[in-house]
Length: 439
Ligand code: GDP
Image (tube, rainbow, N blue to C red; front, side, top):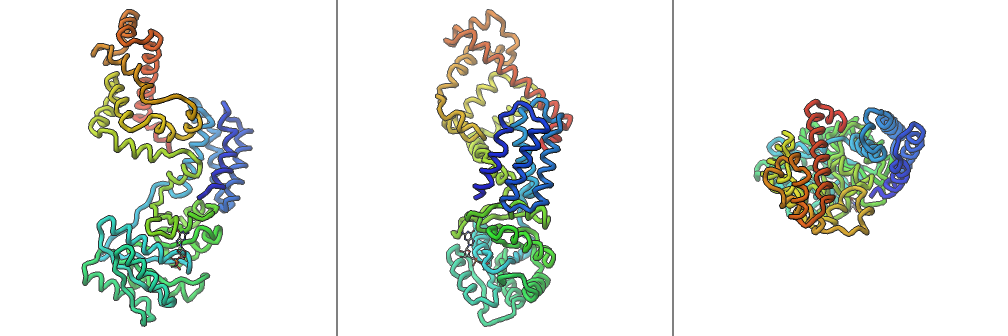
């Protein structure tokens, strides 16, 4: 997904990445390329212009550029703006009511029925009891299709094959759910091949009659700009709560994902990436932005870290960081936690841009050994107050750890820089500057 856009964006940004300085000239050239990459991916022209204007303004804001490597910062700005463009924070669905009612709308063939099955499976996995309702009164096959899916995911399907009144079917379905103690009802509706007034009126009436806590609009991302236009029309009539983008596993150019939020001002809540019932993902704008920019798999890295890190120990250390009391004992403890996460080279590979750089380097968990040896040769007081380590102490530590004075010096220097950085972050955080910078 998004391979083309990814390719083009990376080509656009590559030249700037290596630059030591950002000037108006090289920014202008890059911005133009970024804009072209976006419009080629089917992003609405106005949306592409707005976002690239904002990226340019941020990139040229010298205050932001002072201490960071500008090329990398540019990528970060693009990532933030793409995230914002796609909706910022991930938005969950509203499951309120007894039962909570979800209305699924969209054109025929967009993937409504498939998504209804997936959503049922997703909610069931969360421990909820679900009833699927087949309210497609035009396509008898749709009822059978939903039944097959319901069976697959182990969710009951309510249908009335001879009834041609969608409102009645939906209301009866809700009553049935209430009677049988189901907590969520998913109503799959009829679609047409193109927007038409009768269909719009029907779905509008249906929404009014069943007051869903969540109305989701399903759209095929392969239809490009049409997807955005359809979303607009449906939203004007239905005022839906969120969008489901389907068929992102195809060679979709991605423009829909990038323009829909801006055009209809409704969040994308799920993405569907295949016909299988498991191929459903909650939509996280930031993860998608990183994916588009080929920025490595930081999320997995963090998730792995969460599994390996001892929570109490992490809390203790971060409290010490905040108080500027981080010492060599804490450093050693962190090193050990990192080692628990697995092979260091693998881990480094998950850091954006790192994979290629370290490919030929000889790094393994043993690379930490000299550092651990040096710290082990320090006395407790030296570990908590490294500024006490003078020439003769350095000599003793080097001898004790089987390293050289230069290695000891290097570690002390790096540690000192790390502490300075933490202190700076703390001051920035307390004065609110960091938030402003990250936003
Ligand atoms: P509906 O008419 O809106 O209910 O659409 P369907 O759920 O029947 O889907 C139409 C076709 O698209 C079916 O063949 C589905 O298997 C297929 N489909 C649905 N979602 C996806 C998806 O995310 N990826 C792919 N590749 N196919 C999908």
